[in-house]
Image (cartoon, rainbow, N blue to C red):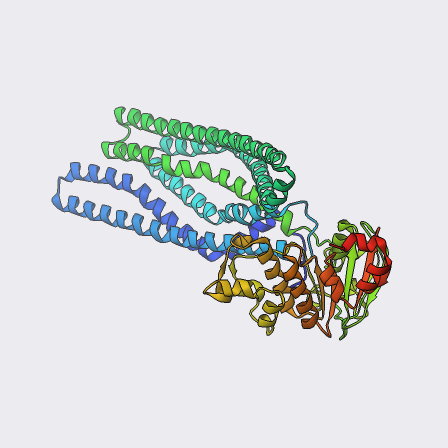
Length: 566
């Protein structure tokens, strides 16, 4: 893993400029081809007007044949330029969206969290929808320029017929853009709010799915669903608001474009009736008046998409510019597996102090689950060192001095709710494919029965979050992954709460055997794991209140006996 990106913050404008700069070549070619397409489209009514004029004047089959050939060239140019132009732009768009998705995902997955007030579901929405809409700027700019080309060509052609027609197109286009610029800004702000609310709804869904079983367990599912319904309703109402603004924008653009086209047609008809333009120029003017509505529509819609892209870029900037919660060190721990907790105060922990020497198997019996969770969070470096008092030392060095990579390689904390990923049993146990102890880890975690149950063995397919595995199977799979990592220091947090008593006994003995000579800490209330430990630390009210072997504590400490005896 890499340390967090500490370069200069990148606001939304920088994100858009970066996207435009690194796709400059594709955009140039796309603009040329799309401009050629729009020019060809504009040339079609011009060519028709010339054909009518010259054919009626000369009445020559040769002129007619030449005109038909010219139309064939124009049609071929229009077809090929559109096909290849859109292919170039859409490829660049898709590639750029992928780059930003990877960038946002990398920020969300960095080992050091960023100081951003967003949930994982919101970051997922930013990495998908917002990345796609930001990358749309790659298509928007060339289409905007090509539409402008069409309007300019039409204005010049009409101006050559009569200067008043050309000026009418130019002035009308400027008026339309001015009127629509106000609505485009409203669309940008409304879209940004909609994306935020949709992201919050997505985050709420993710939280509900993750906690669905415990919610059912204590009957809190109905309250949770009502909470989601409220968030979803807010997102729906905002989506309706955005749809109304988009509808008003599209309707206004269409009406103004139609008014301009009608004005050009009526003016051309009046000029032809007055004898100021000929019949060919009238045909050209009427054709251009009909054609110009399409580039005008594109030209008038592009500002809307620019505002949407900017709104999405601003949401991506929330993630990309967020500073890391803490700046990791650069040191590496020395050889050995000593683990020292020196007067740590955090959450429910109160001046917690103990030492685990290299190669020792220590169990921690925490009377309060919150204290166990706080200790696991501190050891996992999920809590920045400056957020707690005291020090945590690994092989003699404080956690704050070590690089994240060094901490992860030397000290592994396996949470009680370890994630299971879509893939196979093997890829969940050994994601990197480099572990040499997969068979031993499978046997120690008693995952052998799951492997033997399926014909594919370790290559048995696992669904997302282990949906096709039982709770005990998921827990054993997570334990197997932790054991296969074979780290110098291993911390296990309640690794056997979902397995039966017999399996728990076997797992305890196997883990103690496999980890012999390696530093191991188990935070648990399991009698089986407590019994195989070299010593047990009793964690009560955030501090170590007793220390001995499991059996001695059972014999002499009534509170301990009451807390762990089953």
